[in-house]
Amino acid sequence: QGTEEYPIVSSAVSSGWQTAETGAVGGPAAYTTAPRTIAPNNTLGIQAKLTRKAVKQAGDGLEQALRRDLNGAMAMALDSSVFLGTGAAGQPAGLLVGGYGITSTAIAAAATWAAFRAAVVKFMVANAATGPGDVNLLIRPEVYDKLDGTILANTAVSEWDRLTRNISNPVMSSNALAAPTGAPLATSALLSTSIGGVPPFFIGTWGGIDLIRDIYSDAASGGVRITALLTADVSAGRSQQLQILTGIQ
Image 1 (tube, rainbow, N blue to C red):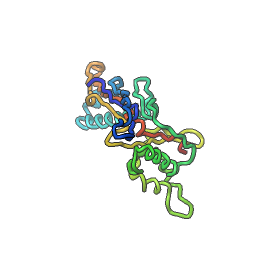
Image 2 (image 1 turned 180 degrees about the vertical axis):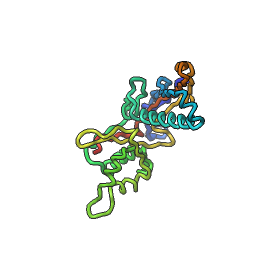
Image 3 (image 1 turned 90 degrees about the horizontal axis):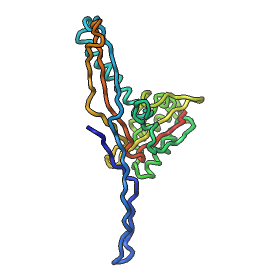
Image 4 (image 1 turned 90 degrees about the vertical axis):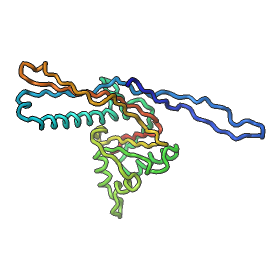
């Protein structure tokens, strides 16, 4: 219930050796934080209009089909908004669009394991990951197609083989990432990692799906309207645990 704020550290803690037996260690540094907020400001809704004939014909099967369709449509819309939400017109600000200070690197080249490896190394240099096994990867199916179809010279090894040897379970989605555009076609990818169990981003939902049955609006024809509502928001917890790669051809 209500608005949740997560304190995000915005300063570094310094250390220092004692220079003399009675000397002090490094001086205290202010430990400052900035809040990242998720609030119940964004509501996703779906409406279905059932005719009297449909209700009389289908029976229990119609209810189960409607539940599946509503759940599936809401899941797709929520997944898309978590990453691609515009922050306007009632949508939350998605990770790839919102101003979270996430590092974004333009690849502007064909998809290869080397491009993703460079991002993994950035995590490791920043002590955000100990190795590629700590990194999660979200890509478009078209990127998989390119990687798997690119065979290294004089070998039977593809770029996809190289990637999955290091990142064991990359996730492919045509819903969470925008379709390739431009010439040549290019798209984006998202990498994330978790430090000490701290998630890189949060998704807040307020209650479950509220289902409203309206038997009055279409009463003249005996119809029923079903409205499903879900209130949700997203925010990046630690921008250092996320990286965006753009221009992957």
